[in-house]
Length: 298
Image (cartoon, rainbow, N blue to C red; front, side, top):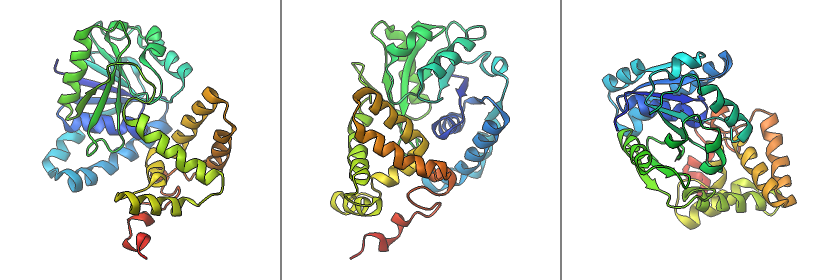
């Protein structure tokens, strides 16, 4: 399968990245969102990517100009998805929101259109009943900063045809992702099954007043020889997204420790300190404190 038109539903942190990566890979790409404020916020995210692609990938001015020409944003769902080969849904991690959106696609979606959800916690079998074309539906989960962390985790429901899995794999390669096939449905996929326990361990230490975020990150960075710690990753993820994930853990476990995490994160979110997206979270951006050599010096 080769995609000629891609539509991304939702221009948030990952939605905007997926759209830009798609356009950078030579595909006409449309971002659909629900109101002018969301469109403006998506455009602000898109405007940050040329410098990052030039720095991280050596993208040329010509490549970046061509990418910009392939990208558009719209509030018109019908015009967005008509003729789309691939639709990537990248909205909030709430089943009710995804259900409503999927139902709205039904009058316009093509029979062969590949419908992908970028959910990081929900299973395809939890959503496939809402999909307007269930035989062409599966999950494709991306890491943050996808132009450098270019992995696409592909997961499907038990009855999904092999041809759909193959087409999703082809699309991942077309947008320069390394496809990782998840052979059995599991919440968290591979990456988050490893990553989120580490994040939660750090959050528990913070919520229980064992150590502050900067001390936890310093320990992790020096001990593991990495360039950022759990709270640096949380800032990239977005603290509003982190709250939604923690609410999911709370609902599934009834462990009151998650409520303590949510309460502490909510203070930052209420102050619009969401992380990288707003210029401040646990650190200040675009030059977070953990990037300074002095952060981990004795």
